[in-house]
Length: 472
Image (cartoon, rainbow, N blue to C red):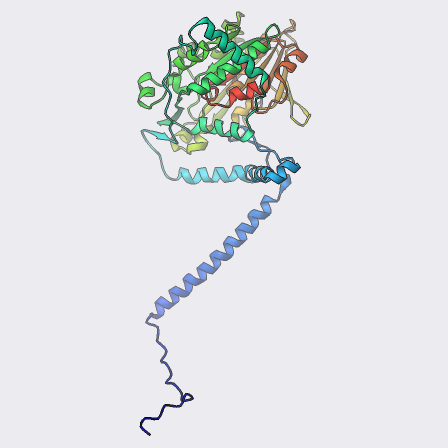
C-alpha cells in the first residue's frame, strides 16, 4: 500500500567509510609524531621519578652553598603550633628546595646554558630598581633642639625595653639577595650594586646602634663600620645620579650623624676614595677585596687611636681565579673570560681559629684557608670560612687581654683577618646566625669593643637593625 509506514526493522543503508586523504608519507609522519609523544611522556615520567628518588637522599643534602656563600635552610623542628598553623610544612618545603642534593650542579648547568647566549656588550641595568628617598643633609637630625634630643633618647630606651623579634632567616636571606640583584648595573666585565636610600630603614639602623651603645655603656665601646658598595667608590657621581641611585658617601655621613656621642664611627669611605686605582673591589662579586678591607681596617685604627699592622710584614697569598655573586646571577661571558683574583694576607700572630656551630660542635679551622683547589665560585671561603654563627681567634702574641666582638655581614669576612694582630682575642658572629644576648656575651667574655660592620645597602635594608635590637 502506498501510504503504509516502513517497518522499523528495515535495515538502514550502510554509511560509507570516509577514506583518509593523507598520503602514505603523511600517515608515516603522523605515526612518528605519535610515537615521539609516547616516548616523551615515558621519558618525563622517568625523569620525575628519578628526581623524586634523588630528593629522598637525605644523607646527600648539602648544608652550605659555595656559590651563595651561605648556610642553607635547616630541617625544621616539629611542634604542635607549627603543625596546626601550617608553618612547619612551609618550612619543610623551603628546606626541601633549598637543600636539594644536586642543587649546585643544576645551577651550574643553568649558567652554562645561559652562557651560550653570547657576549653582552656595553652597559645595562639588570633586576628591579627602587625609588630612593631624598637624602637629608648629614648635619640635620629628625629632632632639632635639646628637648627633642631628650625625646629621641627616651624613645631609644623604650625600644630597648620592648621585645623586638629578630627577623626570620628567610627574611634576612631575601634582603641579602635583594642587595645583590636590585639595581644591578653591568658595565663591561664588571657589575655594581646601586644604593637606594631609605629614610625609615636608616633611622631604624641608627636606633639599634644607639641602643647597643647605651646598653653597653661602661662595659664596651661600640664602633659602627658602614662600608660603601663598589658603585659608591668606583663609579662617578654623575653615573650614580643618572641611574637614580643615592650618593653612598653622603648617605654614610647621614647614618653617622644620627648616632649618639657614645658611638664611634669608622670612616671607611674616605680611606677607600684614596685608592680607587687599586684592586679594592671585585668585579664579578658584590664584596670588597682583602685589600679594600685593609683600608677599612686603617680607618678603624684611626677611629680607635691605635697603630695598624703593616700588610707588608705579612705573608701575601693568591688563591687564583674567582667568579662571584654577580657572575652567579648573570652568567656573563665577559666576566668568565676575565675572572677576579682572590688575594689574602695571613695574620702574623696566628692563623688558627675555632668555629662554634649552633649544635654545640667545635671545629679547628684557619683564619685564612688555602682555597686554591676549590671551585672557582667558592674561593672567598678562604676568609674565616665565610659566614658562621660564632668564631674565636686567640692571638698569643698580643698579651694585653684585649677582646672584641665583631657582628658582621659577609663584608666582615674580609675585614676580620686584619683585626687579629690588634687584639688578644677576636670573637666573630654573623648577624644572621648568632644566638643569645649581646650584653651577656660581652660580660661573659670580657669584651672591650663591640664592632658592628655592615655594607651600606644591608645597613639600610631593614633587617640588620632589628637583628641587633632583638639580641640586646
